[in-house]
Image (cartoon, rainbow, N blue to C red):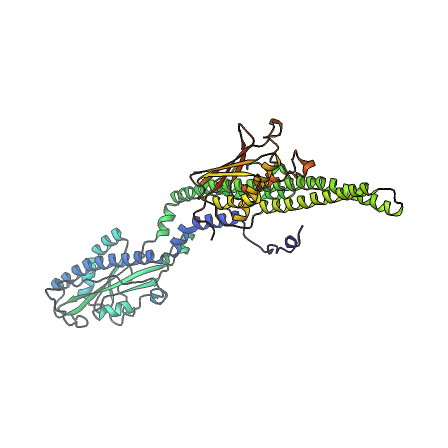
Amino acid sequence: MTDAARSAPATPRKWRPSLSLIVFLVLASVLSLPLFSLYFLKVYQNQLIQQTESELIAQSAALAAVFRREVETAIPPAVALGARIPPVPATPQEPYQPIWPRLELADASVLPPRPEARPPTAPADPAFTALGARMMGDLAATQNVTLAGFRLLDPNGIVIAGREEVGRSLAHLEEVADALQGHFRSVLRVRISKHDQPSLYSMSRGTGMRVFTAMPVIVRGQVAGVVYASRTPSNVFKYLYEQRAKVALAVLFMIVPTLLIGFLFHRTITEPMRELIERTRLIGKGDRDALRPLKRHGTSEFARLSQSFLEMARLLNTRSSFISTFATHVSHELKSPLTSIQGAAELLRDDVDAPSMDDEDRRKFLDNIIADAERLTTISVRLRDFARAENPVALGAVKLIDAIAGLRPAFAALDIHAGGDLDTPIRISGENAAIIFSNLADNAMRHGSTALDISATRQGNLLLIKVADNGEGVSPNNRTQIFDSFFTTRREKGGTGMGLAIVRAMLDAHGGAIRLVDSAEGTAFELTIPTADEPAS
């Protein structure tokens, strides 16, 4: 392990949510949204309150019209009425005087429970008492249908009609006091129910409220009475409670799809990810059996991710095996010349103490040492070129004609011919291109070639290059081994067996390839190299 690898910073260890937890929280949030929306949707509750207020205004207006007619026809003019109200002139542009609902469910607007009725300071006028008795049937019939509570008050705020509190005063209520002055008033008060409420009602503030409206009855410019109405607004939770069986079924239909979605997430995301993590751990321990496709990929993205990961792992495993094999080959290749050098040096050293060699033997041993040293130098140069081919650093582009131009002075003994699309730039640096074609030319010369023919043809975004010589050719038994590192049939003549391996590694690193093709004479190779738009400047 290198110092860089040992000093690489580790991932900080801290708590992080798992993918399963995140998916669960998202699904739980989605599942709870309907309940939270009902709980926090005060706008809807306000709409219900204003709808109730609007209904009470309409019903009170109808009863006020009947009340007004009864006063005009049955109450003697001598009976005292209430506060005098200045007339509101009607204009052609505004012939109507609508009363709009304005109640809002807010803390500041909600009044305490309605106070109890009080004994009046003086009893109601008998004429109003008789009027209330006549309208009692109308109030009861209206209340049976609308479920609202109605009370008719005389000009002094005394109840003259209603199921309860007849003969008692409500003048101390602020909404009634305003109505006795000729102003319509509606309020929202805390409700005190005589019956137990379902526990679900406690989730909404609107269920504990009651709407009260006080509408003045104006006769001959004076307040002749008040229609006092009240009703509890409708509530969504009341409906939910009444339809609890259907609601439970709806909740079930929400939970089942949510569970199915969670299961789908588990099968398509969580499970493949966990298996991929486990494969990573096994591959890191050297288990080659883990280099196989996942049991379940789930999604196309995970399929591509796992495929890319396994390809990378196979490449790293192949590279590791190659490095191990390559190190064995290098050790073997270096061992022979080193052993020869060591043996010759030991013989020469022993001859210093007891001379027994003549000059010819000494020269022979020294020539062997020099030859083996030169072989070691050649091997080291080839190893450096091979390392550069495996990890090319130089990037750029070069025209093929420029890459071939440097071959002629370097290999003067070869008659080099070139033709075809030579001006096509290829995606490789000039230095790396020189390494490729130099090794091919050197390989041709070492096998007795006197001529080298290079032809290029562009095919899409690739340049197809054919390199042919007139040398000995490749025997059928050696055709599958010529690109292997250290394979050579000219070892005794200084061959290292690295030339074609360097060419193949360099082309692989640049997205190209090389293959041996059939040839009537000598050896022929076919190279493919990606083209570039512009040559390197």
